[in-house]
Amino acid sequence: MSLKQWPVSERPREKLMRYGVKMLSNAELLALIVRVGTREKSAMSLAEAILTQEDGIASLGAMEMEDFCRIQGIGTATAASLSAAVELGRRIAAAPRQKRIAIENSKQVANLFMEQMRTLKKETVQAVYLNTKNEILSIENVSVGNLNSSIVTPREVFHNAVRRSASAVILAHNHPSGNPEPSQADRELTQRLIESGEILGIRLLDHIIIGDGVYISMREKEWM
Image 1 (cartoon, rainbow, N blue to C red):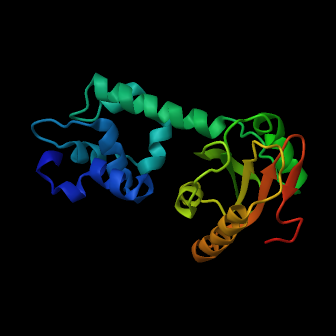
Image 2: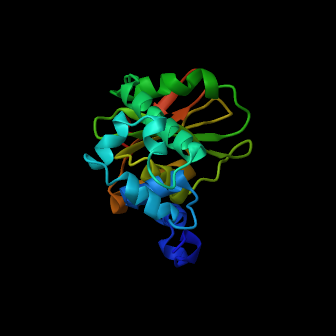
């Protein structure tokens, strides 16, 4: 049976889009690379044939293009795609990982944003997503508002936190007036984010407000 004849919910591509790549089996991942089968074998059947090598999926690391071509039903185009995927995996595994920056205090975060945000004419909200060691996973622009307010919701802040598997978030936004004193709206937003984070198991470590060369950490002020 070809993949097109499978129930839509069971097709590898649809499963990936709905549940994420980690939910696919080795054969399903290979089927996405193989893409098309032959009259005799579907892409999934070809993927399963590849995995019947002596060491299973581990054998892929030693296979060259000619090795794939020896498997009945796999032509040069598919063999080239498989070889490229294997080589890409090798390069990813061998690539040195950049050392992540660990956040130790609010001044460190303020310095990340000060020159970028101190002269902005609109309120801009940035989120710093951290792992369990307080190392930066990513920094994302969450919202851009008007001259004196920025509309941001917990959903916008924590959507990327969940996607990045972050364990903590630090929020930073600027005041175009240059005065970093938090408004009532800033305090209320901070409280909503704390409560939302508790539900999700993701901590809001700090909310930093950037002024013109100065900043206020709501954590340091014990306002959170």
